[in-house]
Image (tube, rainbow, N blue to C red; front, side, top):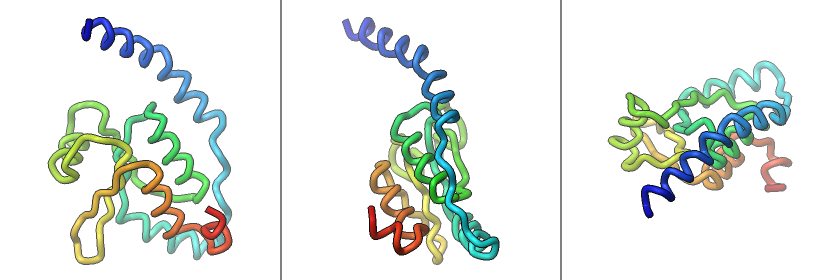
Length: 136
């Protein structure tokens, strides 16, 4: 019975994945406008961040859309398939769960932030203008 259920959900995922990815691209929100020097400062700060994600994960899509709205250039690391990003997520983050934001602290240590709502709240607090951050 387990095999049947697992096969069913894999089939559903195979059918829905292209629609989720295309739908996300077609409805991508507009990024916020910043002055060029302010955007350069934000870009510099985002160099210490990396988002581990799966392309069609709904929570990852939600997180990437928030990044787009805030005009954040955060490195995306696809951890869906075996490879260096998935291994780093498991080895350093402690588990293969996405989305996960790796935050490189000023002292060189890494902090691993899981859960889309926690990641979005962190990004809002760090990068949203004061008036926008107070609304969320």
